[in-house]
Image 1 (cartoon, rainbow, N blue to C red):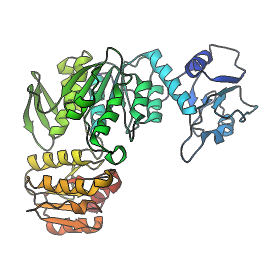
Image 2 (spheres, rainbow, N blue to C red; image 1 turned 45 degrees about the vertical axis):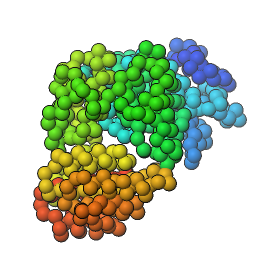
Image 3 (cartoon, rainbow, N blue to C red; image 1 turned 90 degrees about the horizontal axis):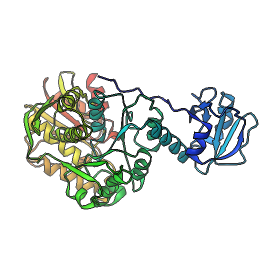
Image 4 (cartoon, rainbow, N blue to C red; image 1 turned 90 degrees about the vertical axis):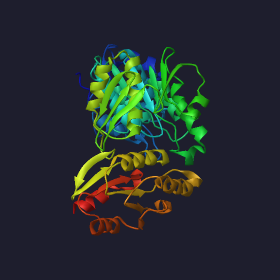
Length: 451
């Protein structure tokens, strides 16, 4: 196995390449050797001697206010969008209209020099899981670089592309969005060989207004898909509706006739797909569905099924994504990294279908659901009615609307009161699911139980 590369800035370009990439206006260039290569930094706190500083701007900061700091720390030059910011102790001064765009162009230029096989992933939920699964699979075929953590915006993409080196064979990039145009921009500078739409659900519906708009925003990932590239998409009517059929498409889903689920427990899943057997050390039909997209990507890239199977079995969920552990005598499944109606239903179905009694679900607010947020939480309550469950415990201003009939339902105003109820009413060995959006900080429930 070739291990995936740890993220770090490997990008170095000479002056001619910098100008070709960014089309910057040269205000000053004292560099006499055109072959000299420069590194880059966007952070004056970690900038190294001889690097070129790229000052980025945000809602609450302006990197151009720290150009002098970068030069004092040893920077050889800088980009600027303000021609009045001229410092005499800089060898190189380059003017561009937008420094973030310059950063994107530089890292795209660097990527194209290396030309790794690129897989881009987006979806309403599960995209980070799929990215991690892809990394486990592709690192068996060559050096692989992936987006770290949830760095799935423009700056995260730049950091990932900048970390590529001459031996990188595969690149896995995660693409997130909150509105139209964001995934299209990421696609433009990633130029994927494979585009994966894990699913299209109701996450961010408060921003985009409708499920159809969400599907349209996800489909932007194909805008700069290579001409001979492929779209691997969830078998979803909305995705099919927005598909312009400009690229070859493979649809995947749990209803595929070539899929058979062999075994499912709280800690693993075994299934057969297209004549080959695969094992995941994680539960849930939704995770099997995630794995189908990874299998299709691996097959398209020319990987053998046995290599794909080995990689998938090595996948370990990252923190707060179906994290199974024993806390204070309770068997906890922590799936509280994020939540929307689709992912909450998937977690509930998996947990209540494959977990032995006694069992309870602890559910919190789901965010960014717009004007119908109350109805989405009520819908979860209706969904719960088809499953057996000893307790349904809720926490949050919206979660109080999760009220399934014929269940013992308790709502709490604080995590401390909720934990006290658990300790007073649930014996050792109780199985408990935690599911909520990240802002609910459900890890604090585990901390309280640990006390």
